[in-house]
Image (cartoon, rainbow, N blue to C red; front, side, top):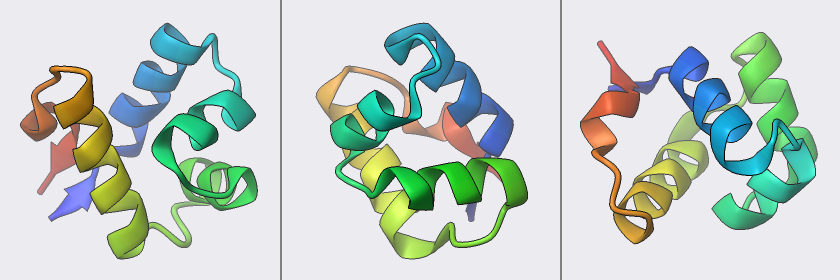
Length: 69
């Protein structure tokens, strides 16, 4: 189970105007970690997966929409 980077980027654009710092704060992760993951795919792991899951639950979004594979 992997996070769909493109869908998460779209979520960041729609909910946080594409602002990495703001979106990372809402996810509870370091902005550099989020940036590196979204742009290179490196460093996703459990922390990003769990933070996206929590964000979706809090905001009434379907987590399955942000999962690939």
